[in-house]
Image 1 (cartoon, one colour):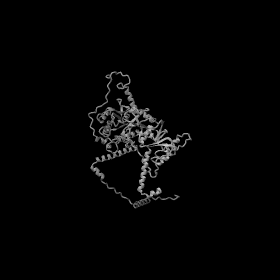
Image 2: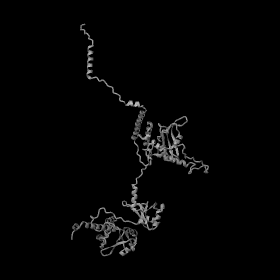
Image 3: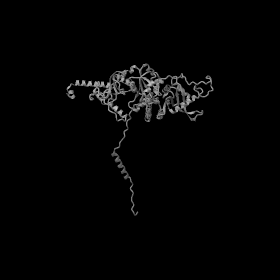
Image 4: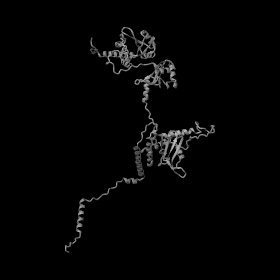
Length: 586
């Protein structure tokens, strides 16, 4: 006999590849078949192959029935049943497990691998060492020799799974990453299967089955189990016998409950559709959340060097810098947020009152705008002869809609035609404290609750009839007729930066704010210099550009200075008067 290796070398490559391909197909076919194999225990000893085929054949086509026997031909009480499809085997297991067959309660389950069976045997170990080994008669099967050999050793070894019951195939030939075989069900086409969410974690399949039987007969009711934790996922699948019953369950709504939980029923979807839907959710970019409206901080900011900064005095620019630094510092507290309807107006003339401020904002806030509050802040420690506090030159204006507040800001901020070119209004959105706003809202609701004119008034009212109650004052204001038309092109020139919602804003550093002020100061110097030069006449400008001749300096040589010094010294010596010395005795 020629060895397999030599024969393989002698055969052409195409023949070898074809044989390997056939072996691979055969192994796949056998693997597919073994997955639809059931093991039936506790069978009566009078059972036959025909009885099993007749009983289990009502759930699907059966390929083979194998009753295990001892060496003397007596039955063991166990059998293997091979179905055509895995779905049919699952259906048979569901309907026959724990039921009576020929007077005995049988146990039906999928055949397990030897390793799994031995592991379960160790966990559920029975202290009985006198178990005799039952020899099983060897019978050839249609699929392979190895299967019959494994089943002939003992009863326990006969309970093998699809993975270890296969034919003897050279494992080196099979690919490492073999694709798993997928089975297609017709449940989606029939539209009898529903998917249920919010299933209680302590609920069982029987609890779910009893709950869903109110709509009609079922094929199965299965709770999804996590592979790692082996606990319920909180979801389940239920298949009805009739499509109408499935539609009833889908339309049950909040009335369908199980152990206190409201069940959420949906139509079962294909696995590919679910994957695409989940992929679409992950691919969709999450919009950034700005619960504090930080994007409005940039609204109306004037940057140095822009067209809006032209004509702003250094005092106004320094004031804007101070306001921006204050806003940056306040917003570091997470309880602070930017109001969408409330504005802060700076640089208000000292002689203005609340009425003038309201009229001004009403003009430039668009048609139909409603102003809730317009108040100028005053120093109550410093009163005038009329008893009115001195104006702090800033105030607050509250609107009912954000659109009106935004229109007013873009129309009035840095507008040179309102208070004058050298005193322009500085308008920003107000920064509020969330805690204080909530407390104020609660006080307002409580006040309305105990207001006799309110519908939900709790106290006893002296107004028994509806006609006797005082009428509520309407806060709705009509837009003024003399409001000037807005020109968006002109507004955009001086209003500053336009903020966009949804864009995440970072806190501005002090360095950048200070740099803006310095840059604006330098730009003002340049503008003043240009304006000064513009006032000069043409002759003065020409005179500045004419180069003046440099004055020549007469340098004295070193030799001349030295000779002059010597002559001066000589003259001093010559001009000194001579004094006669007297002798000692005179």
